[in-house]
Image (cartoon, rainbow, N blue to C red; front, top):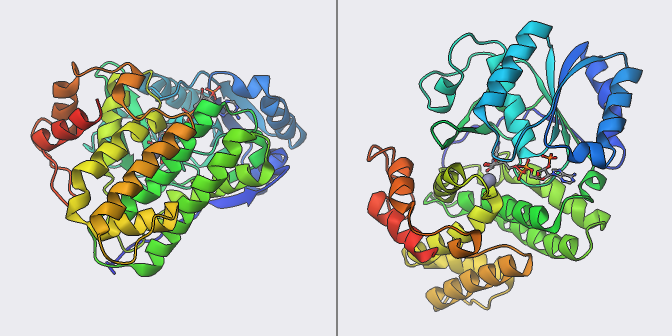
Length: 391
Ligand code: NZQ
Ligand code: ZN
């Protein structure tokens, strides 16, 4: 097992009613003025906004609002939010939403205490040294941002989506009530299921030495997500299925399922180019297209590992012989499952043709300056080959 750092400081309050405690929790920490950050309005339709603001008022927490975070959150709103925090003397950024809102909040929290160009952090030109605390009321199970060390932002002028890790990105607290996800559409639920699986699969499929405990955690999490996902798609108000997805979302990307393994995430890197260039592409839907193609391209480099995945997650028979056949069957079952939960498995289903391949591969390799590591190193040509399999 490789050396690793495990730092997951987020305080999680999980279950029914937890979001009603938001004011009380913030008061407990002694913060008095917060930025209430949210997305395109779903929280106003489903009542979460009313509950959260009532809780803040009851606890005497003063708040300034900034809504309007779009899926694939934008740098311009982050800049606006950071300035607002400075002007208003904000002490904590409260994200009420999903990955887009949380990532926007994380970046605002850093920008609020910085006077330089915020984008420098995303392109790794500077490393952030301080941030306001971020609190979360989670409304969708997907990104794992509620416990993760990363934030992903799109620079709309450059059509570049970039993420980076920092211990400062771990939220102070996350209130996770699965009931809040009952109103998430089937499509977004499907995107979330894929994203949860991928955060752990990208760790499981890294070319690292054995880490058996971590690998068992990983495959158990993916299998549980696959099973609960199928139930939640059929019955969006199934509490236990929604609860499994929500906890899996948090654990999948908090580093537990990758301890002792590399976590480079090549499919995520390719997907960020896709949704960075085509704003309409949801992150999870992009991953549903890219992962099977990536797997078909690479499975022969580590057939046993793919066969084990097929066996543990999809019950594909595998007795230690003919790993390649089991691996291929596992990839086919993955595609069938993605289709079953309403996800695309080809770029054509996303309305994306081949016209952007050159630009995407160029950006993904930092114009020739980086190679994506894994069982096989992926440069521009290899990424192009994978995109061809996505058509
Ligand atoms: O905008 P609102 O009104 O909030 O609506 C959202 C949005 O349209 C809606 N939604 C959320 N909760 C809902 C709801 N609709 C009804 N009822 C609810 N309870 O769902 C839509 C998608 O929301 P979004 O936040 O974009 O989804 P998700 O959580 O999948 O986040 C995606 C973003 O996270 C990034 C992705 O790249 C993408 O930008 N990621 C962040 C990561 C991290 N920070 O660790 C890791 C991931 O790999 C990922 O890259
Ligand atoms: Zn993801």
